[in-house]
Amino acid sequence: MRRKIAYPLLAFGVTAGTTLAVASPALAHGYVSSPPSRQALCASGAVSDCGQIQFEPQSVEGPKGLKSCDGGISQFSVLSDESRNWPAKAVGSSVTFSWVLTARHKTSTWEYFVGGTKVATFDDGGAQPAAVVNHTVDLSKFPGRQKVLAVWNIADTANAFYNCVDLNIGGSSSSTPTTAPATSAPTTAPTAATPPTKAPTTAPTTAPATTAPTSTATTAPPAAGGTEWAPGVSYKTGDVVTYNGARYQTRQAHTSIVSWEPSIYTLALWLPL
Image (cartoon, rainbow, N blue to C red; front, side, top):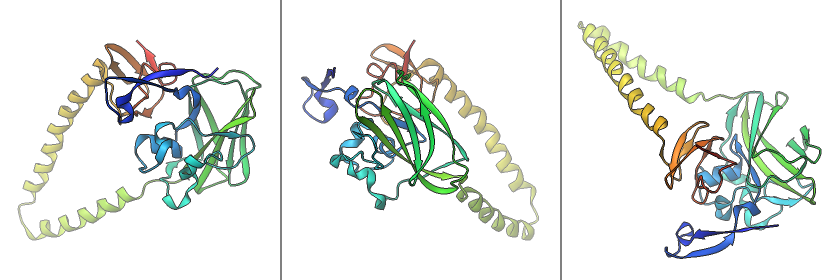
């Protein structure tokens, strides 16, 4: 049965101090969080102007057998808009897809497609999945930029959940190496003309040495102590936060959004400590 949760109106940009019974995110049941699906990119703010899907990335539910990113839902049609130039995550030839489930429906199969080709099927045989589900898929036959359609087929309904994930398979970021040689070339010319070469060499070496220990010391305590949960933060698996006086540990890497607080998604994303 579908349940409802009372959320503060402030979370929806309305006057605070009252509550409104709205459809719980449990009505929307799961999405691929890593590598980030298109709805995950919208929810984290990495892609803007997505409309309603940014508030409910796990809601793309439609009839089984579709091959669309939006599940045939008109208000989520932005997910099928190829003109938006969706960011593609650079991955290797073997990719692990992580689903975050807010309602753990009995599952028949999980399917993965590239173009019209089915590349992997995982059969759950009607079992109830865990709150976080991982599948490792071999994509070595599809190098370069690809759009992967990930489908979660529910066992006891006629519906499925749809996610499109944009990947650069076997790709890597080449922008960083290209910039480095450009800066080192000019530095050689002045050194040859100027006799005191020792002065510039010592200065850069000392600066990084003092900076490194300082940054390490400041980063460690917040993770151990548990910083206050906040939206728009990229949490790694194992990070500890506090929320409403309670402590939680991240079960699944994700970028937080309003209405995904630890007290709501304890089993899917957070483990109470």
